[in-house]
Length: 146
Image (cartoon, rainbow, N blue to C red; front, top):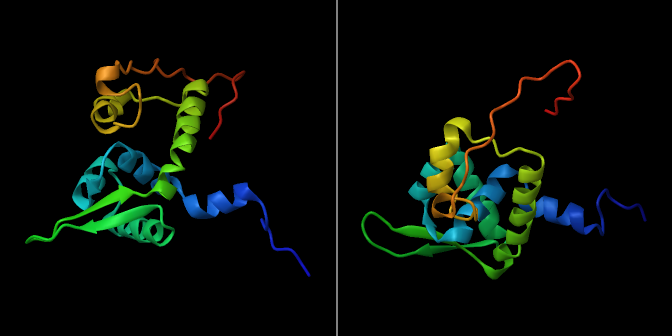
């Protein structure tokens, strides 16, 4: 029997569930509090509504989130992380730590947006999020990672 790529590998498996950057950013937002679709669209700008809805459907299918229909007119729907979805929060902690260690936390024009929207980040808002150091211009001797 021929093995398929990634069979039996937990890293491969979680990457299939996580999918792309938007999934983890949605997890970040829902780790702080349940959110309505419009809140997610605002907080995750520039995500398109189509991409957001696709990711929410995928995440619901994978049992990472629960969609709660609270009724009303217009309909009031909010999304909340499930216990399975909460298992991804240590991954967010690791990514945050790696981003800080690699100096990837350049907020320049997004500083105020980060302070107001990244409730999950322990450095956000009232926790004294400091501005990122100024960007250094690359030199011939430096290595630039894209």
